[in-house]
Length: 111
Length: 114
Image (cartoon, rainbow over all chains, first blue to last red):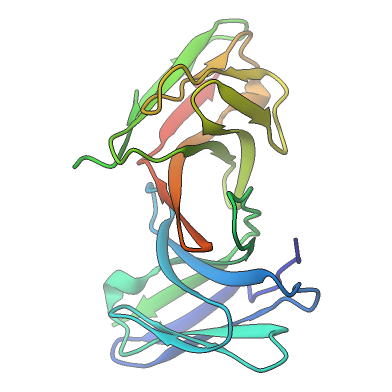
């Protein structure tokens, strides 16, 4: 599976939009991109998943350019409760996945 | 629907002791996983199962064993606890929706080996 690279940490303020970019240069044709969120002392929680272009749900948007070598997680109008670690993963479609978690991006939202 | 539950929440073990970490899911998922997470790090896969009676090693299986006798339960066994096994352990389960898989994680078990 393709290795992912994302910033170690980011800071933001309440009400701002936060964009976290993930690089996955070696993504394969059958791979798709998934983002998980982890709060302290909790297990990761699925946020959003996509293959190409744009995906939006009630929590976030995921932008994937045509070459699919990167993706951007967009969190609109963050609040203090969005302070967490965000993981970008590449998964193989059509079967179970042995997820490879990197260190993730630590997002700190300030008042 | 409780999702994925794990017991205990926290445990202190002495070196050489053994214990079983329990994991149960009530979503009828076929796939189940055990991960460990060391401080400040991402999760590493220990073992996984694609169905009852079927298990396989992940990235860091040494020192652990698993079994999967039912769809719901996937216990993780530590036979001879070592300080290197101090970590937070997460169990997860998943299903396939079309071609995409989503994993659901339990709350974790914090283990300290002294």
